[in-house]
Length: 308
Image (cartoon, rainbow, N blue to C red):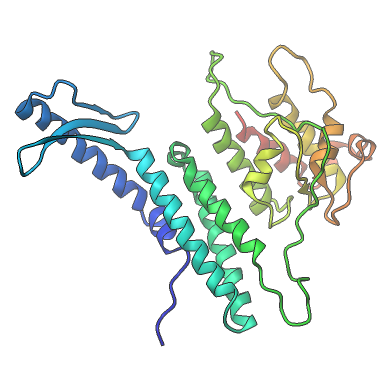
């Protein structure tokens, strides 16, 4: 029997086994030489290699002695490859989730979710991927595609599907985390995304305070400063969420302001309890216990130091 293709083979090699680093190293070895050769041999004064932008431009002579312009953009090549491989992965996922026996479909579905969440975690933790956001976007797209096609076991009529929080269709604006380079007003959005990713994995995977099926994009969205469209399921108790909001508030205060306005109303719009029920502002701002007696309170307080 022919072995069936793995949906995430490309991304596993690219992320876990150094595929990106290999491609990047190859680019930075090859193109400085190509540009130098074009300048020295062809007198190409416009030849340019930009290490930071990861681009190269030069003239090259063909076998019939004609000159052609070569323009290479490493970041664009990554975007193109990731987009193509993402489409291939979705085709394989669709095939495996719509054919074969139900137990096989369910086993494949669960494996895909485990693999893709592991890859998303690696991408969130490694700063190199802030230069290539298309990688995280593709992985989230694959995860969402698989979730949308989750197979139902016989007699369940779809009950096996992941119970995601219902959208909050309102005008409440989320919290907003912004990172500025020390001593300047220059905002670093890539680093902010990276730090929020670290916070996400600590909350979900180590402290288990948010639902295990929470996506990193949904978590980042509640710190985006935009209208809330999906709530995060808080798996802890009310006083732990109170502790978290109190600890993180100083890192969310806008420049020029002394306090975070309406933080409890915002928190109620961003989170639901473990049963999927909405919090009220009053529930969150009156925890009924002092912070020093909150279970995991100290860990929560230390955790938010991730956000510089």
